[in-house]
Length: 424
Picture 1 (cartoon, rainbow, N blue to C red):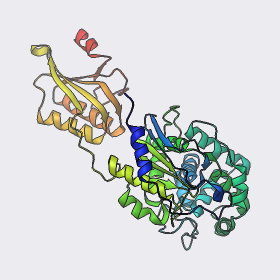
Picture 2: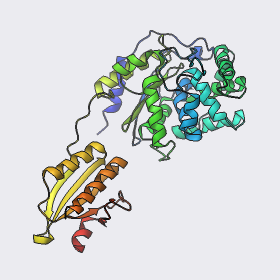
Picture 3: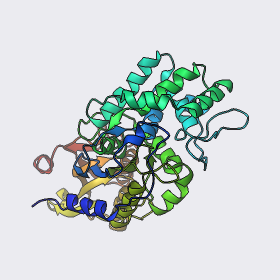
Picture 4: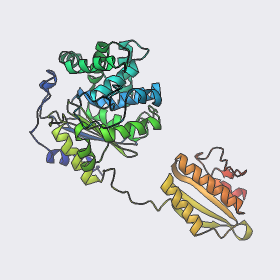
């Protein structure tokens, strides 16, 4: 059977065709783009790729680079140093406005140009300008899973019309937001924005954020989970500039747009999305890209505020093995153990206590245990032991290394149910 997803995505493209909007002609090279190009790519957090339309068309990443460079600054310089330089408040203004704190000159967020220039300066710190650009190009390449290059024609064209960015950089230097040469900051930032990508590249970058910082094809941990959480939080409130509120209420997907026509969106734990179409609306965002994201959000229930179905299935099966005093109640668990699923497990044990003196938690079908799930499971094991139950764990994948409950008790761990039954 052939997957229906490519056919569905093609249907979305056809339904969202719109010849309104205009090319970003204030950058001469961007004005040369084919206005009829349209592509859409989805990449799941596990690395499955679904792509349709002009998905082999290369274009420059532009402002879609901002969240990734912000993440690089956080990773390299630490949260405190970055937050001292760049705030996280929505500006409610266009991408190139002078949105700075009145007394400090600190940019309001890293998604506007002022904040992006400051983020580039943070990455530049202690490096030569060409080294900073190479560090960013290398990061974007790792996220995309292939070697990306800089479009020198676009970089030259954009640098020749960068008067406003030069003014912003000089203003930031005047406020001592950074100590570097403003012209070097602007040139490095423009070269950062001139890295060429396709929608497949962007969707893989987005999927890396969706997967908690792990590139879904290579398996490389590029960003820490804390950095991803910070980046996605700022994207949610600031990524779409002066249209951020409308975007969040109607589409509900953390996103970032660029004036070349690219848009990325991230559903944490699910997928990354990328669209490309170079005709822009009054906010500098792809007209057809916005329409495609809206259609996907409605059709696929991707809005962040769409309440998911409550997972009652963390306990796959409950059975009793053995007889008499040797009997064991076995709870076979499945899926991911996070707060809500761990709470369901706790409630299952509290509401229907085991009738045997021995209890086994079988984690063979558990895919992942988040820190909160681990804490809750170990606390439960400790309390059950304190109440007089003998508790063991079947853990073939090592989800609970050194399972210290904090109650002076470490449960016996088996590699399989067969081993538990043979040794009981």
